[in-house]
Every structure is written in C-alpha cells, then in structure tokens.
Image (cartoon, rainbow, N blue to C red):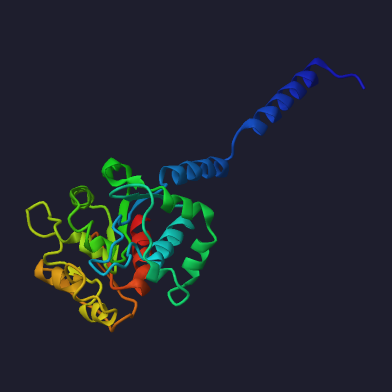
Amino acid sequence: MKITPLVAILLTVITASSCTNTKTKVPSEKVSEEKTELKKEKEMNVLFVLTSHDKLGDTGKKTGFWVEEFANPYYTLLDKGVHITIATPKGGAAPIDPSSDTEDAATEATKRYDKDAEAQARIANTKVLADMNPDDFDAVFYPGGHGPLWDLATDAFSIALIEKFNSQNKPVAFVCHAPAALKNVTDGNGNALVKGKKVTGFTNSEEQAVGLTDVVPFLVEDMLQANGGIYSKKEDWAAYAIQDGNLITGQNPASSELVAEKLLENLK
C-alpha cells in the first residue's frame, strides 16, 4: 500500500502524541507522591527520660525505673513509627527496679522487652539528659519507678527541659511515680506547673501497700496537692490516666498504656 505524504505526517503526529502521554503522570500518582512526602515530614520524635537513681533510700535495696512503665509506652509509640530517644541524668545504663523485673510484674510488654536485644542495648546506653534539646522533639515522656523521687524531682536539667516543652505547648507525660519530676517545675508565671490542673499519680494508699511510705523522700499524691494540682484517683492499682491541656499523668503501672495512648493521640 502506498502511503501518501499526508498520511505519513498524521501517523508521525499520532505516534509522538502517544509517547508523550505515556510519560505524563496522572493526578493519582501526583497525590500519592505528595502523601509520601507528607508522611516523611510528619515523623514524630519523642524523648523518654528515665531515672539514674538506684538506691531505695537507706534500706540497702535497689530501685530504678519500672519496666512496664517504660516497655508499654515504648512499644505503643514505636509500633506507630515514632522515633524514640532515651536519656537519663547520668547517661549510660538506666537502673531497672528489681521488683518490676519479676514474674508477678510481667506483662506482654515486659515479655517483649525481655526478648528485645535492641531495646535492652538502648537502656544500657542512654543519652545524657543535659545534652538533649527540646527543640528536637515533639513530646517528652517520663516512666516511673521509685528512682525519680530522688533524682528527677530536683534535677535542674530535667526541670528546665519540662518547662521548655510546656512553653512550646508540647505534650509532657508522666506515669506512676514519674510525676515526682514535676515537684519543682513552674509555668511561665512562676507558679507550680500543676497548679489548677487535673493530675494523678501514685496514691498514698498504694505507697502504703508496698510498705515504702516512710522510705520515700515524699509522697507523690501529697506533693501534687501541695503544689495546687487538682488531684484525682481511682481505687488502688486500677488503670487511670488524665489529661489537662498538654499535661498527661497516670496513676500507677497499670496506667502506662492509657498514658501512652493519650500521648500518641496528641502526636497526630
């Protein structure tokens, strides 16, 4: 078949147009790329602050942080893609409260931690708290255990860090004995940070139940109330967490998951 010059020109135009269209991205592809970039921009960074204190007063016994109160929030956030940095006042190994590392205190989260070599390595090599910059994080979380009553309650770097997070209106979360770290924290007006805010923490009756009322330097419930906090609680050992603005607090080890969920919700 003889192809006339006009037909040849038309075939050339059609072919060129077809090749060009195959290289043009459809709108759905552009949207997908934009969503991917958005997810990268929204990566959340949370600072976990643990105690460095390992002596339970003058009892000769050891203390530290409570494993469940670290492990549950750690995995709750980690599994959602949150990047976690762990720091302590002294850096290096964070002491584990021996009472939290028993079969009686075991939970699904602690069992996962016991098999997680990477998490254990991170606990053994924590960052130095003084080197942490609040501007690098979207929130801060304090696990409990009795240790914070002795060091984090008076640690100048911890106090300044919480005050900076609060001034930036970023979530600050605590569970069980960890609200002890709020003891000397103030707001922008020089008032106790917890003054007029709904808070909870380890109860006086729970402290009495574990036989440490006369060992600890102060009782979390009493301190929060003395600082003007609107303290509330449930029955001993019941899961309970409360949020007031950017401040999140939990009553006891059983409350760690509730605190983690509230913190995660505030990161979205």
